[in-house]
Length: 186
Image (tube, rainbow, N blue to C red):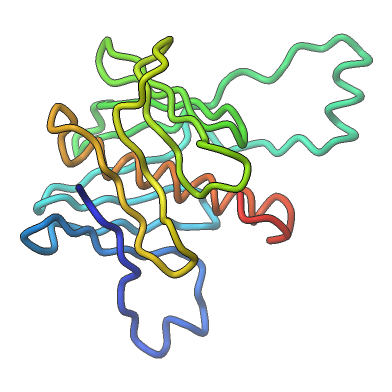
């Protein structure tokens, strides 16, 4: 199990807060960090000294309700998918995730496909399933308001994939806050 705890910042940071910073821990101690930039909606990940990025393929275009209605009435197609890509320092894609809105994510790693589904409307937890399966493999979320974010997945999932799942969870929360001015928690 990995845990994402809010990182400590110096006093000047709080004046210009635009990102979410977490230190990542396993049972033995700190293994890395995640910095999610709210403005660019992308994350830099450090896992055991190796650098990774999690970012959309292209800038996210927000479709407000009236644009959605106009698109439907005019018969135009839905905008193409804009997945979040997990890349290593050389730019190789290790995993990709496509948002399903508040319902979660479709996540692909190699030739494996998974679904990250919200447990319930009031729960802060998302369960990871193999695509098309009904038994959860594990979960990501925080049980209480100030509790650290935890990801509990089987050993078949390496640490970088688990940190990527934490980045996706963070993205859902930040994007929801950006899109509605912070009125909902995602």
